[in-house]
Length: 235
Image 1 (cartoon, one colour):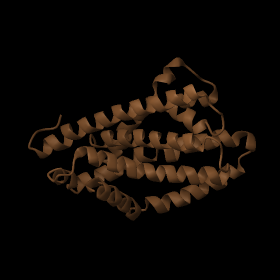
Image 2 (cartoon, helix red, strand yellow; image 1 turned 180 degrees about the vertical axis):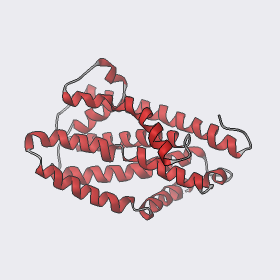
Image 3 (cartoon, one colour; image 1 turned 90 degrees about the vertical axis):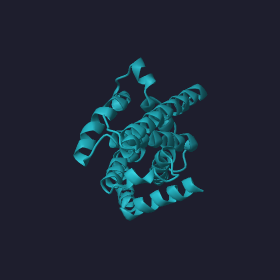
């Protein structure tokens, strides 16, 4: 019940700050733009758009949301209540991920229709968005300004964007270790069918990285927010 209330509250806050209105307009723009792209390039363009915008939507928005709450001293008092850090992280990530999945679904069916493997596509968006949002949250608690967040986030996210080079012909076994490889396989399955073993690998690598990101973000909160609220000093 507590998590459910927090989740609905986060959606309400995102709506109040105009995220839903913004992404209605952004989605309309992408739909129109994709229809203007020649068919032979439309699928790659659709994959890039899905990954780089709805898929990674939460990574950048979470910074603004966390910094806003931090500047309003909400975080210093929030965890004095029974509300847990784990619930905070999951509520923030899941609420932004819902927006990512809805946006990706609307853009895809408006341009490509109800494709085969649509479930794998949406699963890829879901797990990719969860990972990058949780990662962004872990970065955000280390920053005090938006400029600082954007500067630090670029260094944290750059390595995870390397598998995008596969789309221009560059490939290496190293990419298999990154969640982006799995994300591209699942999101691209609506255009380029994949084998069951590839789907299992993609789901597994994304689950693994989501767990790592969650544990890291959780540790960051306890170290940089909870410890400070308890009278300690952050490092």
